[in-house]
Image (cartoon, helix red, strand yellow):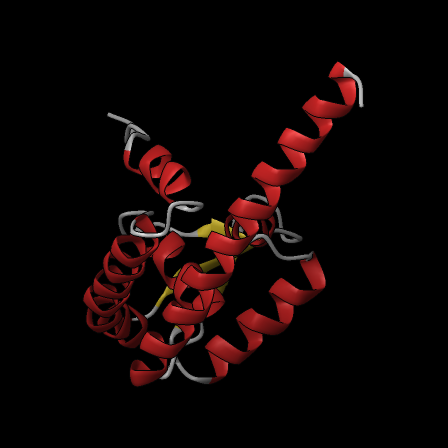
Length: 148
């Protein structure tokens, strides 16, 4: 095995470790958020919209925030809109543009779900940190600086 092969294997091992941690986190968050009747991706959408400080997002921005295709985003927005958690607004400047924003019910559910999400995330990261193969990735996450 040459140096280039070693580098590829190191990256592959890193990716597998990251994927394993992601799977643990996703599983725990799905279980925890089930208590408030939200999936992880639904929570992600509510979180992205809440971070807009009362503003709205275009559908393609929401798709990027949730890491979904445009069609999957539309289906998800339809479900959340049917539940009364968000609403769509036509862009005044561009009739083709559609914005999405939280409703009062969506904001209320998000406020109930956020501590559940945050506690579950903290718990699963603390558990993962005790596993030698996952600890370096968890340490790296703790070292990520938040934007000012």
